[in-house]
Length: 146
Image (cartoon, rainbow, N blue to C red; front, side, top):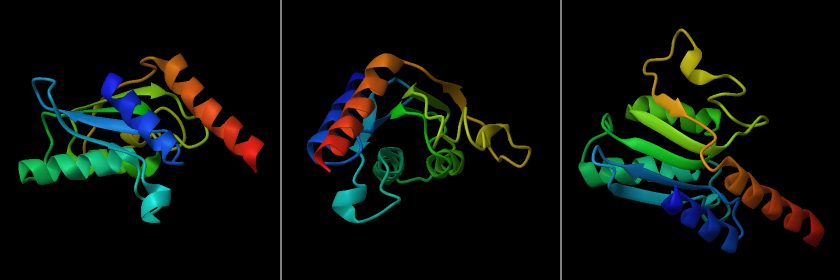
């Protein structure tokens, strides 16, 4: 989670929503990492999780990340949860829950749907307070400056 938090802090410094993600291999070694780049890339799909999974797949030369863990600072949205299904991520570890935009434990609860092709193991709430506080501070500052 330290690497993901580092990526999230980098995102905040760049004016992005502070979300960071890391892909770990079967030996828990990082093989890809990313931060949100929605504003920088003018791309609504440039979420940290999606960018990290894409980078890991390119690094491995395969679309299957079956032995990999996605570590992310915020509960994945439905788009990123669906991408994790298609990349066949083995496990997702996330920090803060996202009651409004989450797709794992909130919203559509994608992995619990009968038609879900693959169900990653999920562990939420890791360093939740720290991750949640970073997001709250970012949005508080954003509101204060607008």
